[in-house]
Image (cartoon, protein in one colour):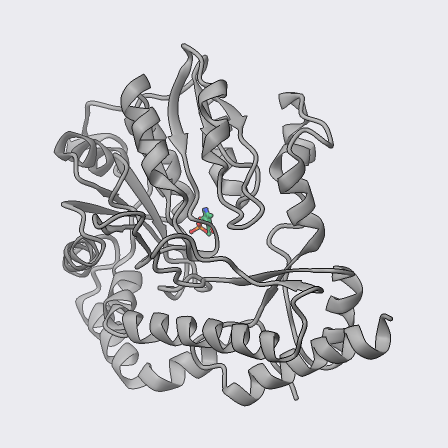
Length: 378
Ligand SMILES: *Cc1c(COP(=O)(O)O)cnc(C)c1O
């Protein structure tokens, strides 16, 4: 049996006529950049994410970059974030000349270990970027408290977490709605993916949202009059048209991902693999939206090869933590500095979790993993 990591064709088959109609409308209008579809999508996403404002930009990477630009973060400033994330979280900081200060992760959730943040705050610290990795919110309450105490901005990297909720107490909050900025990505492999690159900045702060709105069009409100130096980071009408169709199905697809995660958990328990496999941990009453279902395993690379030979495609998010990347050597970190991130890079493995995955496929994946530990590695 072949099980791919993600099957976007299976998703597209369900909605093809609707998507094609939406795309045809954009072509009929010949209005390709920003425009009415983008405005409508901004409204719908703001609503869905329980944020007052949403501003469409060209990618999730740009959402992070323009958020930092809107806060005037640059040379001499420090931003606290995690080393265990996609590259763009860190490069947004360094591209502006600011210095990333990295805090290790919790082994259970792969998110920032918030107990380590306060010791890293200096007079130069301007912001914290928690990443809601794999689709589960970082522990935001202590982060928001520290931010308040030390007057720091919080930019949530919610690229993997649209629709996730943080529920440490009765105050249930939406991913992306808790900081001054919430950054979304519509890259095709995210839970809400477009037909190319796209992103969005969420905010509850009117001045901040307005500034991001200006920055995405070269810092102007009135065309050819520039108050700020911004960039070209606009969302296309085509992306918005496709995303408006897909947004209607997002909860159905997300619930299917959650159901698949629960089914894997059950299969792994029944297989008696608790020793070899540590399952994803959901904190509090959070809604984990499983952009990835990531397990920790013994003999990861050999297991991955065994699965591949049996038609099951997996992925490693991420094989090298960012503090050990060549381009960030100048930051001065070395191996051993952030041990939990380094350990996660050695043993984490993402299994197929997409909505259209069948129970038979999941059974097959678990069966092949069981076979590996029982017959191949003994
Ligand atoms: C995907 C992703 C981004 C970047 O989004 P793009 O739209 O690909 O630029 C940023 N941070 C995280 C955690 C991501 O997963």
